[in-house]
Image (cartoon, rainbow, N blue to C red):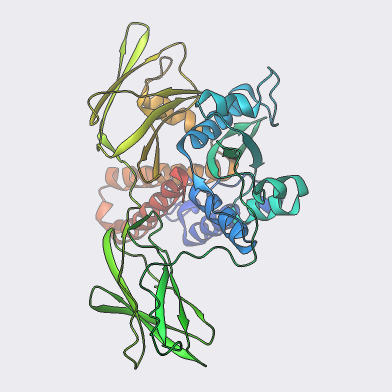
Length: 458
């Protein structure tokens, strides 16, 4: 058995578990476990592209395609959705109504969102935003929420954790309306025009004209990928529109109807833009439309985050840019509004006994841009040190991660044994090249595995 682990004369001083065929086997095993293990019941990492912004984008695309109003992301509903998700993980239930009498409405009302209409969709176990949205649209009751004209606001939370004994991604989608006013579906949607777009001559009613209808004058967009749309009058057949920002052409689009739309195919930069549209090859130019892009939410300085225990409370402090108009700390299923005269340096107390399973800072600016920062790791674990927490996280990792980590650890031990044996014999220089090759392979493998272990949320 020692010939598998230790350099001996019988294995020609090359342990069987460090030979090239063994390295190939390790590589194939890792590829199999991490790529195809799910087919055979091996837990996979929960990497996904599910995010609140992706869910909201698909929801609004579905509504726009049916002539419905665009739902605006609301910080209170987002906080309520996060609190509901945390509560499901804390209490361990999977339902709109919890075992202790929890309801969706209590989380919404707790954020002081005094709704006239409200709704909730739930999903778990999906790996893509498209999968979640398609499943909701295939369900009449869930689709009714997404397509309801009663709603104006939306809030979404995406949280990973262990629910009913299984590692999963939980999605909570909440809808609301603070008024009795509801939207009506239209076939083409409404159009906003700017004054001075159409020139009507005193003697000729057929003057050719072009105008920009979207974005509207002096508007602020939180979507840096916004398209420019407009319309022409008295233009026959195919025509091409050139779109200018200031005096620079940013692109063109063609149309053979009275309406046209330009996709820049890249994000507009933050700040102010002055647009105009011109029919290519002609002098027909639209009035200027000035709009701004503000898609950057208030950001917390992560280096400034500090958590210290003071008696029965944790004292949380952090710095944040002053653009926020709504700031709250979601502690488990409880949301703590922040009211501070100093808008850049925040100090808040959280009860040690009342510490939830997750602590998230949520900040919203005047345009509705929302940032979420999970700061759970900053709170000390009374029962273990940071090193012990890392060990615990490895123990609780899914089977795929455990296999990957086990292989990395095994190869490291084998390399150490081989180096020791050759060093003791005074022949370490004889295997320098081989050690470099195997060591480099091990290092690359280790970096790849631990990058995957930490995970990404898009």
